[in-house]
Length: 198
Image 1: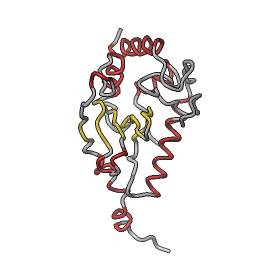
Image 2: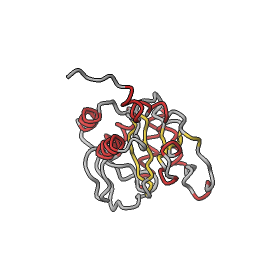
Image 3: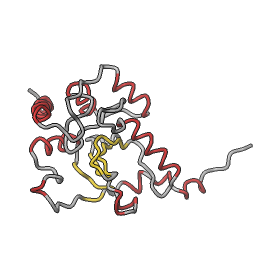
Image 4: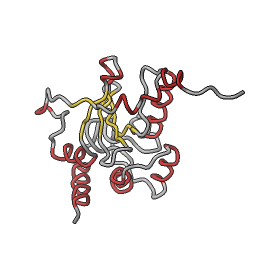
């Protein structure tokens, strides 16, 4: 059994015994075409482990706090699906350049109070980020939750995540790539854009 297979087995075991808030029953896995359809809408590939979670574990409804968001369809708890939330965040970021949403950063789990766990689909290891906007400043709203999706899942399975009572007060490192990843979406980028010929 590979390391990933072992992790998926541990996730399945924990998912069978711990139901997230708002979910009354487990969600069935997505069909084999759903990840590709999601990627077509998003415009970027999903990390393979994330696809495996949806294909083999379920379409949301497991994981810490409110659990993994469904990929394309709305869940029973009323949370938007991950793809819809990403598109809404990107659109909101275009309307309000003070709060840009980085391209390729997919919300996968809601913590409540507008906080999300997000996978950076552009990072090779699928870094999991915490979006915590309550300080009121986009530059200080992003943190590294886990170096990889694998680490994030292990922390949930093992009960060692920052959100566990035993780890109260743990401080997450800021995500230093945020200014780089959103530099082209600010107002200065619009000023620097070449004028179109009419």
